[in-house]
Figure 1 (tube, rainbow, N blue to C red):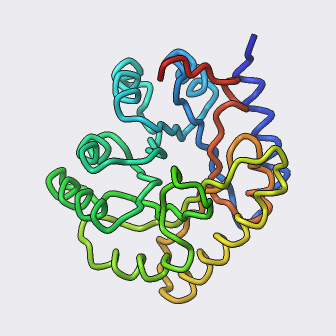
Figure 2: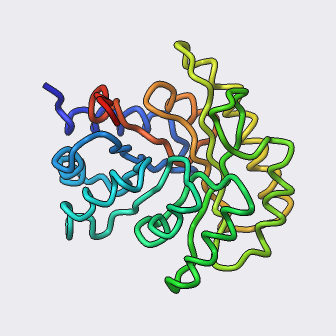
Length: 231
């Protein structure tokens, strides 16, 4: 039987041993496919960040969790289609998967209607897989510049999903590449609010932290292996 509390404490221990004093790391508990009861267990252990991949799965859970989500930061980390942007803006504090100026414009419109500034991360595409989305590394800086003229969104940093590998060390070169892009933008624009580097998942989060991640997205290491069923 999965012990969520023990798993969270283990992940916290790994993070604490890996992070630098000057760069604390936030743990995002990724709750896709897991029931709201598991999410509630994590919240009861002091988890302050949760991540979901699908709007249609997240919203019923949020309704069930109700006031338990007070003070919790909600992250949308999956691919976001423009027709789901309204719900994402209304229900999430961060969108990690900004991958086009068209999507940025749609998010901006809904954020303006909601009277908010939507925090976004630029997703960097390092995988050659056609199924993976994001901005190519060579285009990230230019994309960031263009995004600055779009109202009601705040580009807070970068996010990356590395190609799958059985060897976590294979992710290191990608994390290092995205960290370099992140630092280049910070140097060029001196924006103190550009401060988030979302890298690493259950299999490679320790390496991501070693390479400068400020957020790690942890699902199975907290909640156990997923049963996707027909999702």
